[in-house]
Length: 442
Ligand code: SF4
Image 1: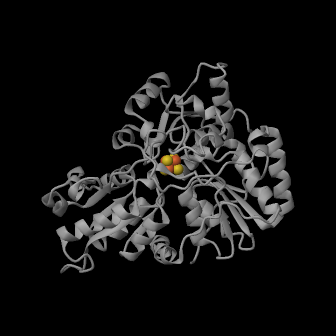
Image 2: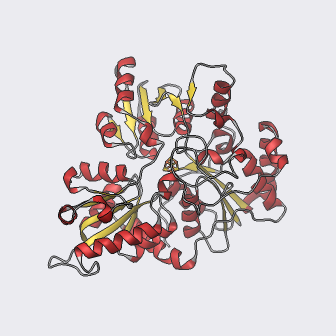
């Protein structure tokens, strides 16, 4: 597969202030040292406390239902659970030094600071998967993110490279909301409504083009690839929807209803032509007439991090900080995007702040680890999270420095732990869907 140009540069190590970090703030809240609030005091515990329990663990997704077959992480050895932050940091640095060019560590924007500080690259999921391509000789790619991201890195990397997820329980509740069996069932029901899904009409348009957000399993990307569809990111969703509308009457968009709705609405698609597909209801909960009229069928998925942001929070930010610039992620609900000044991907948010030449107050609607890091990186601005409650992404939070140390020391000892591999029959069509995205032009 040809790669997109990599915009990420290797991150200079040790330039980022580690304190105050979200982790330290949570510890202070639980110790009663601050009046700030966290959504769950269990966040102060090590994630290994939750490895043997079902569920996503504390944080934004704790109310979501985890699929029964979701991967579980085995118990982390006691030496890693019991080591303090300084010891773990020293062990990670030593293991990385020993491994040298044999390993590349990737850190997602939403990852805790104590892990990101050891990352060679920091970025969003697709930037990181592409950054790994800059290291074709690395034997191991350690992806400090969530499961679908490691799968994407495996799709793009060379077969002999091992992609590693430090904690197997780091899934993504949104990606899990589009289950491949439910998606296949949906396609079958849609074919009962629209007829032959592979037969173009008189204008050469297919009945439905499936589009999946990058935040989906490899199985869903494979499904999309097999059915003439495409992958999108939050940066290129509009371009991808234009690509799809040039080929089909309508789009089936999963898993994030909000990204689909916000993008299609901005393109002028009326809300009444965007029915939701609830996989637990016949025809997704819509009538045949509604589906016949549909332009975008939205899968019933969402991100529990971005669903926490509200119009009331924006109103409070404007009241307390006159002139505040409110930027939210397009995974936020439509009313929140409408009430904000701007909406854009993590990359958009970062660039918007970096481009501000005058000291500015920013209220940001995205994951708190990124917001706090931006606040530390741009001290000339006042930057705060719209949500006053400290509530990180539950699954990103499952990656702790203890797991990273365990993975890296395993590699030093010649042992590859927690390798993520996409089966060949899924990988081939999934790569086709990704290649279509890379070729789609604005
Ligand atoms: S922030 Fe939302 S979409 Fe991103 S990994 Fe967490 S749950 Fe998934």
